[in-house]
Image (cartoon, rainbow, N blue to C red; front, top):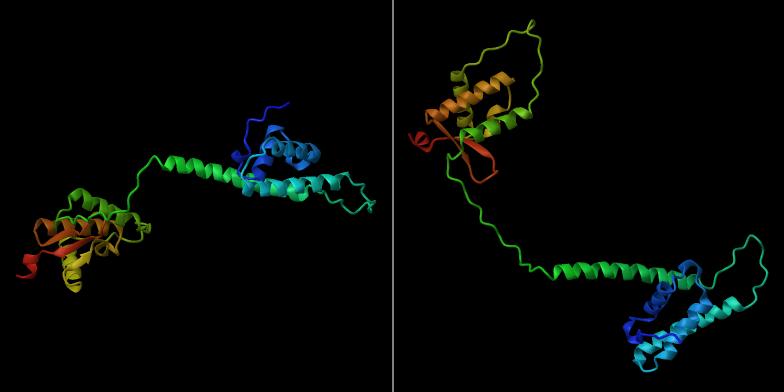
Length: 241
């Protein structure tokens, strides 16, 4: 006689026991040999008589369901028209087993994830302090990178040189233009706003004019924090002069 090593309380319920029998006997869920499955299921219940009665009730309900399906399959089937499909008494049971197997697989994955998470200690998110950079801290390299960013979003039209003579721009004139913009914007101008219009050559002259104003300590550039917008500002001593 077969030695049953699995206790009834090792199963979470009757569906768990059915899945064990199906996997153990390598049964095709879509073509269950209901008589053999019922025999093995009842054998498990007979082998273990001492178990929790609250759990036993659900196992006995499943046993009654298996016996009902088995009896329906053994009864002679009345003749039906050829175009009418015959209902399989096992269909509802198969659907329940498939649904149970799906949730069992999901619970296994979630259990594995929980096991991995238990190895880590988490804490509440903490606010990171914002470090403000000192005024006028921007290096020439950072300014050049900002200027390249401005140029990258401006497409210059290609005009035949034979038709239009290139216009000459002076650094002195562009210095005056920047100071005029600063005056209209109350001494504080967004870096990109100084390069809103003009050809590529004109924008380059404007940038050189900005560097000259910084060299003369007429203007300064400021950035409140890392990755924030860059501003061109009139130096404070100039504003209060």
